[in-house]
Image (tube, rainbow, N blue to C red):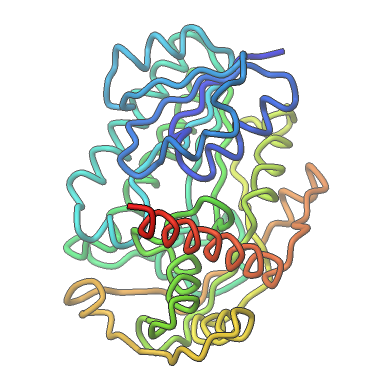
Length: 332
């Protein structure tokens, strides 16, 4: 069985992928600097004999080189993610997302290791037509608007990965993830479902940015991991890019209402202007819906969990966290 290196392994997507890879009999090394990931995300696999965690950064060329050398396949998930983080720390985000990917891809090429690069639906920028296919145009705002730094950086990552595939023959797969959600996802950095759920169970106002008419699709992390493993195991995926996400579309204001209903919350909705939530000149897209026909044609993948499944699970997880925090406070 191959040995995997998962960068960003302490993140919520990385931790779920690692569990799946280990369950299939693989060995896994996780690399994470824990700037946004959490070590407790890896508690379910911490004692596994075929798992090893390395606390380090993808910006450390020596560490990355050593780890890639000892592994067979690289899954590059490490990135500065979340709209809030990108807007507040654009320089750090650019460095991590561009230079970090360059280091990982160069090492993969040096040792001829297959690599799966996690990209993002942010690639499409302000393109609100849909559903979006992998060949849909990118429509970006001014470079002076930090909102588009993440899209620009991940676009460079993709170009670099495809260049290594075409010119150097590096086995490369690129996936564009559309709003992955599920257990272990932090409410920090602008992640909308965890934030709204925690507000609802706490009886706080549900903060919706803009007028809430913007629509998104949310895909459970377990379904996303199924897509990633299917692509990793399919030779026909090499040299290509695939959208991964759900087609179940909902506006953010309706999402807030759905969460309140499922949580039995009386919280009211508080509409926050974009310039107050982020910064002056912030831009958003009205609609973001993936076309996953390409992925489905190659692997027969389809999402298995509905939005209500996702929300019910997230609410239950948040309530458990709330009880644990209350118990800790009462005992201390």
